Length: 294
Length: 215
Image (cartoon, rainbow over all chains, first blue to last red; front, side, top):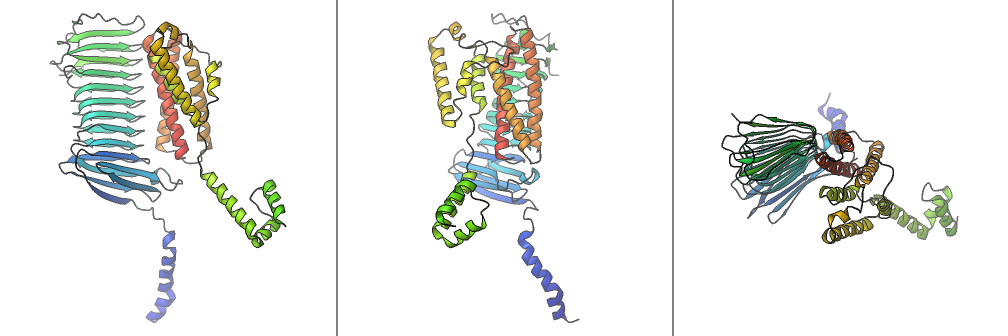
């Protein structure tokens, strides 16, 4: 068989058909990557609004530049970036409303200057922030939030996602329905943790003059303090229990204010050390546990 | 078919399906064809406009729960049927503009009352704030359920999480309500109940927003 015959008779039709069918091949088959670089001057503000699902990871470096790397699962979701001075906006939006959950996935990796303010929102997937100094607002429905060595005014809101905050400093607010919160080795001077059914663990030192308020409706509220800590304690539960495993460290309140639990609730009041910090623990039906770290 | 006949046809039958005679006339009459194209374009654009959305119930609930939390108003009742007078009044404010004006008005009134009246008198404003909260939340939950029934899309992990959390909130509310009924003076239980209502309102609002934007 002649080569020209083969070409015209078999290969060319196949190639022709391939060319014609090219637009019909789904363009959303493979994940697509986007990388953008933004030069900033002062303390930048980064806003990420991920309407889809996916992970957001933020790490810092010493450069005055923000690098945004994003991957999206399909063409049914669009990733847009915008710079206005030191404000960087990154958002994902649905292009095709027939997209399923998997096709709406968009993951973001950011490298930012050490001093950066963050506003991050996602639906599912982890939010991870490491070594960033600046105020941050982090929202997630079902995704967890992990923070490591961050400082500033930190506000975390989730529906079911949990928070793990390791070596955080500054002020922390956490609000969730079923998410739990773990605060480990903190240098926080103002803490407000609220969850309806999740657990709360605070394992670390209380800063003098610090204010710490932790409430869980049905979960366990556990505080592990050190022998050097100094705080006034107010623990109350409506129908739950107070498990005091630090009775030998807890003295009657030495500040002249006589605290009493309501006759309808169980309470524990006392002072550890000089009572410099203020610790308020509350639960509706869960357990409040106080113990000293080894 | 004449132009006037086509006009009557549109009035009675709408734009589609067109009869053979109407199609024939449109192919011959430029004026009617332009008119038909304009109306078709207007209808298409109108379909893309978002429907007027009711003001979120959580605005009212948040105001009310905040007043309860601050001790300005208090009280609890298991009665869910009787709505207070102002709730029916609130039905008037269904449009966004009226809702905004109404919320502003409520804030101004509450601010005035807090500033000028001693607490005991303010307590007389509403003796039973929770019943209307419960009614509003039940209505909103019903709307969310209908929205989910109407949705033909698959259930995502986010939707599943929201529903699961709503169930947990409902269970917690039921628990707190029981306690408050049994021990009305339990301020701690009352406080948790108030916060639970607020969280439920926010959760339902999030579910509404999500249902409207994604599914």
